[in-house]
Length: 423
Image (cartoon, rainbow, N blue to C red):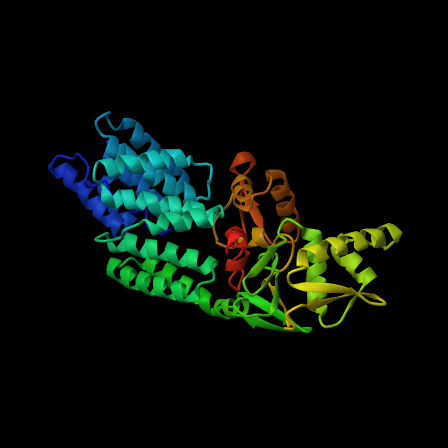
């Protein structure tokens, strides 16, 4: 989220020449000019100045130093300055998200939000709510993010917060594959960012608009492939064909949907059958595809029969699996075509690569939380990706962070963890 817009200028400050510098620094931060803010408060150590220095450091990308300053400011605000402490907590929560530290307590942010609302600080309360939405999206809680946004009234909110809110609205709609809603939200975000006159915010809107035009998936039909944009994906999913969605690991026909996200062997079998349709697939080829076997023996063939039987039960509403002389073939009940919606990048670690592709440095604990996986599993995957040169790390121990280059030429929206739960 671009900005760090927590406003300390409205605090309990006396109108002295020195405090006018604090107000000027706050205005500079709201305009996205951290260097101008630091010129005014860099040598001050009173709590409001510490907080503003923290936000300035955050805008400059010095996240660890920013958190130190914000914590120090929160400790030094007096017992009657609960609002200012809540603003520090809100700012620290945003810095934590920017540095992909998802261990920051959501309870602390909720408490700060209630304090801000109770004291009528609508601007910072709205910002705290948007930070909570951003956290939901990062860890794949799409329904919670959608619910939190539905109750937000932007009303007379500053243009910067309107733009951020519309970007988050577009993100939710993007993962729901509602491309018209995405376009409308981004149009509103563009207008708001132009009013805010913050270059970084405008660049974020442009980047989101560009994602709509990049390929988001591959369509495989009868052995032929073509690239699809997000709008095309939405149209494919709305068709009456039998669709094997390899982005979210499920199968659908019309309004009927069966998820195989937790059945990787069954989904591997289904995808192999769907990509070969209308032809059949040899039994040995299915064994290699589903079980990653190096050689095929009788136990593999026996297991294949068991797994195909289980897959038949799952597919009963959509299709039949017919045994042939050499293997099995897929027969849709509707009589339509069989389409495979494949991700732009394949592999067991595609979701991990998609997360790292946002350009931010992630810890293994944050990646594990976002992916709903164990930290050890993520560490093994990262080690493999690092050996292949696809990711890199810096730091040591608990301070170790992971980065990768953005996936060029594609949008990875359908590979993000929350997309697996999208309706």
